[in-house]
Picture 1 (cartoon, chains in turn purple, orange):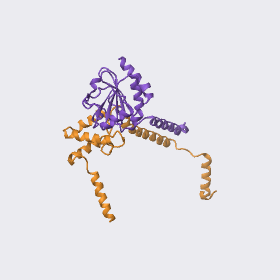
Picture 2 (cartoon, helix red, strand yellow):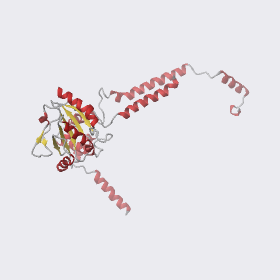
Picture 3 (tube, chains in turn yellow, cyan):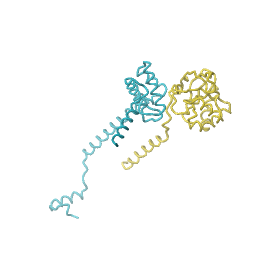
Picture 4 (cartoon, chains in turn cyan, green):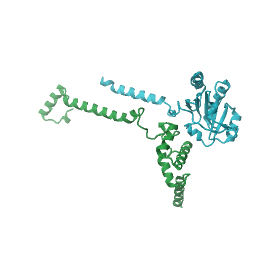
Length: 174
Length: 152
């Protein structure tokens, strides 16, 4: 019995360390899940005279995607968002985070615009209100304006099919 | 000459260090005191006072702005927790999800002490007897008065 004690301790340690390795330290539980999406009213990226506010999206399930032209991972997820927008299942609203207006506009012109519209968050204030710490970030918001899911980092096709679409379907039925 | 250059560099380094965007040193002190309690979410092992990540700078500005508006330290910390969760606190609060973190080490220590005391007691209760052969040999050696070191 005593002989196996060190082995037992080793296995327990290995198990804990193994679990630790699987966890993603970048993924911080968001305090926003189940809470009302913070309100804002700000000019649109493509049209400085037009405003955009989450209240406009009431009654439909929508995605809020935080992006910037300087953000490398945004380039990576961009084709996925383009494909999603072509499916016409969910409106995607962009939050252009701490970008120069011309850079943001050019980026969309060059690579394509998956967004219904983009809010222009020049000083990152809205980003702070949404607890943004690593662009890109994506929020799923329901018909009542409640945040249901937050994803930090680039979205992948797999994530869209396995997580986002089923959730959107479910929320649309509600 | 070399000393002079070194002195210049020192002064420069000092200037870079001590040039926060605000001008009021009293305010800066309070900003830094609060920032010292908040975790930078980009570089998670630093506080937003230590970090020069863009987000940390933004959050420090946010702290400064709110202090100027007359908000209290609690208000500002609550503002951050509301947005970034308990994770933003450099010292995690004691609640149901963190009690293992706070009290786990003490529980381990108490467990270890209990185990140690038990083992010591058991060892004292039944001192281990040496094998009969060894005892006989020891007696023989003692009787012969030889130095055990000399025996092969």
